[in-house]
Image 1 (cartoon, rainbow, N blue to C red):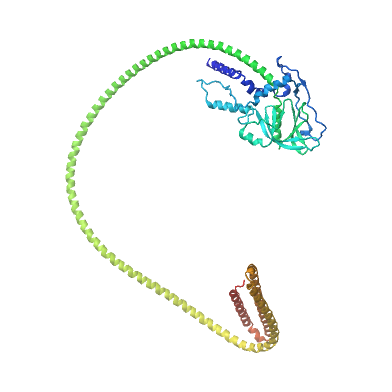
Image 2 (spheres, rainbow, N blue to C red; image 1 turned 30 degrees about the vertical axis):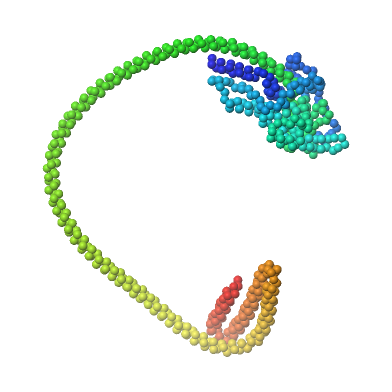
Length: 590
């Protein structure tokens, strides 16, 4: 029964909140039309009362004039067949009456709570706020405004007589079934204040209009708005495909709002109000019956409650008696056990007393014996301590003597090691001296042989010297010419350096770049001079070697000293190489 009562109260709150007053007609009617009517053409198939039915004429939207530039998506025109009616004064007043509430300057709506009531009958402010936000989102609110489906900037096509086509950027607001457009400067005011300016540049009524998406010359994302009563079609261009689709859907939905739909909505509201009154009467009758049944059940519950209380009290008394009997029995058994335990403990204490007396007698005799032994042990300990002191004195004397002996032993060992090392060194020196003497004797014999051979070779070399002097003169002349050239190059370099130094402060930057190049040239010429000297010396050495080899081949005596001559030449070459390395190191050549 409680669930039935809750459901009935919820239905009552729904009917009373939905069907009361004219606020639903003025504020919530457009949402009902959008939810009920899926297509604009569905209105013809619905049977309406006599006062709602109006003579209608189905008219097709006018075709465009001979302009082949307007193209639709996939070369198909998606247009809406809408119902049109002749423009009468009566219909005009009806349209103004149905749309007068849409531009009312209120900032919010009265939110109707359609949720079932709570058990305590109180509602919180959070539920009201949530319901308000949900309603506002369903009806297409933009901030505090109601009924603004969409707004944004689009390009509008203008064409006057004998003038080219122009596209101007305008700020559009879709308010219910009207498309208002302003200059772009109004957008900032609208976003800040969230209020509609009452002085637009133009108003386009969308009731019964057909909207087509396509493209124009130079513009891809266009929307065409046509009506039989318009002089010409209105063309609007979006920035991208998403913007075009959003505006297309919003404009298609806005064309469904009309005077005919409002009349049909009023008819539905009246029917719902009548049904709500009937449901209220039925609810009242059911509530009266439920109240009578609830009173009878409450009386029965009170009686049952009293009987249950009596039964619970009797059960509590019975449990108390049972607990008392159990406690008495337990106390009796505990007392008997305590008596038995006390008797046993008494017998044990008597036996222990006898045992303790015997033990005390034995302990007294033992104590006397131990005292005598203690005196003897103390005398012995005194004697041992005296002997220990004597022994410690002797140990100290012995330790000092042992330390002295150890120091002497270490000194002796160090001396012996030194003597052994000196002995080894002397033996090594003796062996080296013997080896040197043998080597000196061998070298002496070799040098004697070499001196004899050299004396013989001197004669031959004196002959060769005369031959080489003529060649040397030619080489010396060439060398003098090269030295003169080098001297001239060095003078030129010195002149360059002096000129660079005397140019002044303006040539400071050039000196930084030219001086390192001059130093490099100087180093290069010095290297060339050194290479020339080496080549001149090498040619002499090679010629001397060739003549020496020829002379050795001719004379058998010379073949004996061949090895000695090679050694002599190699020693000279090594000395020259060493001198060149030292010269390069001194001059820092790479």
